Image (cartoon, rainbow, N blue to C red; front, side, top):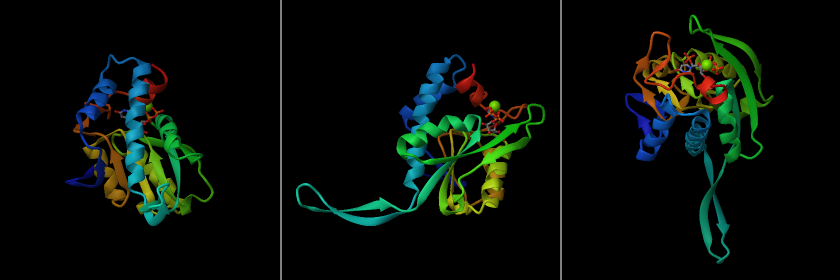
Length: 217
Ligand code: PRP
Ligand code: URA
Ligand code: MG
């Protein structure tokens, strides 16, 4: 794992053969929904684990059962998840699996199917969100419009950009550029950087509509 040049503040998961195999399954148009869910969930878990690696820690020494001192660390600070509804909700369980009883907020943003422009319908966030590290959850970053709108909501609520981690399965290079032009200090943790967008502003090669494939088709 490292930041990707020329995309500073984009942390791309190690491109192992195992990860490539997982993406091959979820990108395949013939993959059935139950497999799409299962293998997406595996990638989501990797993204959450990587996001957690970026949180600050403080040194902590403990004594082991063998009466030896062990110099370790413990996590500092509180976190919460914020999902961009609907597709982002698919990432909530992966976060819950790693962070017991984590607080989760929701922002409902939908892209207009004709114009691909995002529209904000609803937000419900933890009261003390400004004091937390925020894992913003959405599997797809295409034009970047939805993520930008969601991040504006978080910043209006007092969250510092440096405390936001955007966890994402696939992003386009154009979307990253658009997003980081506004929020250069938000860290994006992703598993794949796709080359472009098609005429309908879908990622290419992409995987189609994530929300439909996870919840409907
Ligand atoms: C998808 C996706 C992102 C957005 C990405 O959501 O989950 O929120 O599009 O596109 P953008 O970067 O161009 O804004 P969509 O609006 O399709 O809603 P859904 O989650 O209900 O499928
Ligand atoms: N939303 C999706 O689900 N997929 C895309 O490729 C773009 C937006
Ligand atoms: Mg959709």
